[in-house]
Image (cartoon, rainbow, N blue to C red; front, side, top):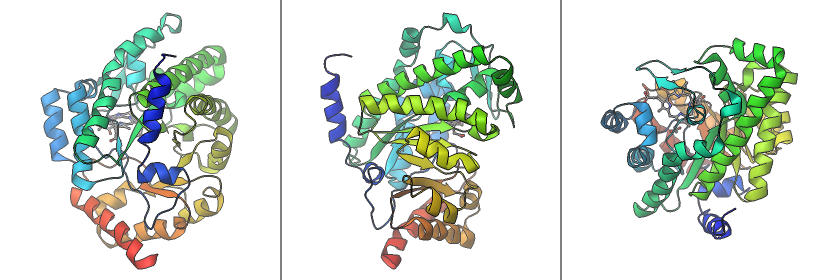
Length: 362
Ligand code: CP3
């Protein structure tokens, strides 16, 4: 480790002053901290303008001044409690040498899986250096613009979800090719998962060293696996990443989002020792309050379509989440990313309802 690492860690711990960081360390407030997955994105006209300056989505991810600009946009508009690094989980396979493109109005398309024996992680970090620079710029810009108590979330895809895209090479409903390979070629698949575990750990370490004070691990396709496979490819690698990060940075909270984990959410939380559990839209808040929030703080889980639709049902569902989770640490968020056709006015409404709940109920 470089000599100044310890000093840097001290600086980071000092910046851990935000409401989100405090909540994840066990504190409760009158109202929960709020941020939204995909809070920087196509529902904001200013995002579309910056993306067109960048030319395309990947250029946007790799241009630190523009990526930091789109990270700040939702903070300026809504004053969320946390900014999340603007990037994508798929920059990891890209930095490992796998071709990646985002065709307009299509999901990601990846090239052939690279030869695992030729992947060089030192080159990987050089390829990802614009992302690390983006993290530093975001932290500085937040402080310069009066958001010094806004937390900064760094993130990575979990090894399983990254492997899904690397093997199926596009988004699918069930990632059957990946699941088949995991069963029929377990040695090669294990090698890929180990490599991704190491890459994600190092990638997140760099994000923390550049100023991220909270981490989220996105395992968007955890829910396609049956229990024994889930334990092997979701829980075990995630546990390794978290153990390693917490060994280096005991105070950095890690939010795990094993989307679709269903009956395995509780086991995931206990086994990985994640600081906070991101809940998808299908987890009933009353179930989560009794069975998951007793293990660790939870985050979620409003349906993005409810936010997009707005109106009375939006208020009803927000209050239901608050009623169930209040009194113990929790983070208000969606159960998946914001839909691109969400009216920004609905987000203003969401924030107003949450703030007023503190006046009316506590
Ligand atoms: O604001 C934020 O939340 C930070 C930025 C962020 C993006 N992607 C930007 C993005 C984050 C944290 C992600 C995570 C991500 N990326 C996940 C995990 C979360 C989830 O959604 O399940 C996954 C699976 C991906 C892979 C990915 N990136 C897909 C499947 C797609 C296409 C689908 C879509 O929504 O368009 C993307 C593209 C993407 N990533 C966009 C954004 C803002 C849209 C690109 C555009 O501007 O055209």
